[in-house]
Length: 429
Image (cartoon, rainbow, N blue to C red; front, top):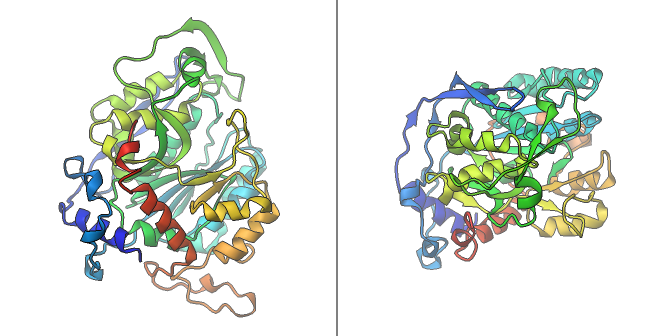
């Protein structure tokens, strides 16, 4: 294991002991013509506080100081972190969503899957049957489907609303977990879940991975100032975004931030977004309710305006993406020609992929070691591998981790992101 990550965890582990406490949660309910989303109270399972509170955050000079490196006793390591995933898709994404779910599956994690409301009924029923009848999913009860599908458009606030909905479901039913990761059906992992659990074990569990910046440039005029109404929130089916003639000034109560719509957010921050105990998440949500591209700004603006969380950001969405150029607005579909760049990026995820593209088979074979229609094998899989038998048909201890070469790649990425040159200087700037 990378000694710098071990030393980083040891210092943060000694910083404080984290208690457990119970918070009521809220689940948003829509909707009105003005698109005000409100949150209703749920009961939250207990969850651990972050290991690194803002008051004890490390200075840039304290991150990965080589002279302070010491081997980390195994007795000080916490259990492997649990990851909570939202995997969502639109019409026609059902088969790809199932493949992505299998590639992401680990019994230690939690999953919510969603096909948006414009998907054919039979496609949603097929996904529901897949989740219900999978032996592993049934054994561990860690995959849930949002059966009452939400309307989701990639312009307007519906994607944020759907993300908050899934997070609330995970908080209500998912037990304990440490990070929430939102993915689309067109995303795919480049490392195994054992690789992720292995590397993230050494990180403070209040870190939030999201690509973010306050320099929103041209988006300020084209996305922030126009007032838009998203009919998808209150109509039975999708419709075009409506623009009204008024233009608003930028807010004075908080500063706008933007970036990638894909992120890995900590349990404490997700709880803050749902519960909103100082009203900032709700205030920002109301502003983004008539914003052109809410998923590219809502969570970024909340976290960078919240004193409790602004020092927990890591400026990365953990994805490899090949953008169109210009104007870098839409990701290109990845193929076998992108394989080397994907691996060299050290990113744990990539997007976007066409269903059944040959590059997915290459990723399965060379990076994930996944057989067709099987989950990715890990340390918990103790069955035979001979003659194409699924080793995960026999389940051992689900906390046993068997990392692959992907763990080393991911360690290199995390070490770079948390270096003194990149960590503090890129937080909410």
